Image (tube, rainbow, N blue to C red; front, side, top):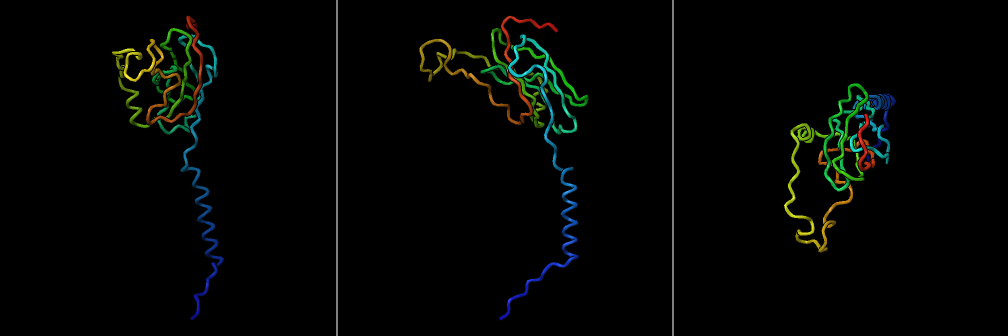
Length: 180
């Protein structure tokens, strides 16, 4: 019994395969979306800011394929929308006001959002649920003192449908005024 002979590719076949791979290599960068380019330039990381301040940055509109939002969160609190960043001019700015009254840490984040989260953020604000019992009276609290039980100390995870592009943590000074 004879085994089938292995047929070597012809020069024509190799040339056609090479041309096809070259065409795919040239076209692929146009179909792969670029990494989003958006920055938070002001305030700087770990800067001390007033309770109300202006955040500014830059954005490359050609790299943004989904809605871009600026969100802020205080330590232990949920994320709140500051505003949608319209990348057409290449720069953005927005006024941010922290709700806390003392020295607190605030995180600013530029995020790309999906259509569902974009509609939710663009709609009317959702009121925060009222706390009917203090933490120390809730079941499962092991301490008998007020405060501390169940309070988160870090930042909440981003809402579902949000992808982080850039983030900056700043410190809000107690009693500082907005001068601009």
